[in-house]
Image (cartoon, rainbow, N blue to C red; front, side):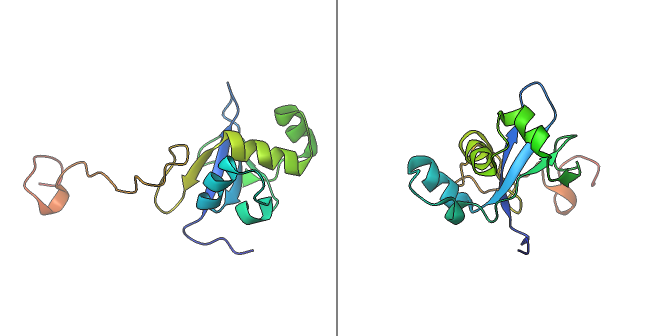
Length: 126
């Protein structure tokens, strides 16, 4: 499955660790699924793959975790159980819009830090 530019994912960060696990999702369906677990996971996730970033953040290299790593992090290596846990406890991050606030898709504006090169504000661009 090709990953588009406006992908969304649910990221679960382990406590006291930089390690993160995530799945690619339809963000609206995640919110619906959290309210109604009868929605099939196939409508929520783009595929049944779990990814991890060992160093954390968007800069880390993402890969597929081993069954042992899943077992250590989630007490199971059953991929469906892990995906459900990540969906329930993780934060939605929408790549294109930069959303990462636990699933709030209503706040999609990008706050400016000033007028930049086109304005008259004092700063490095004057």
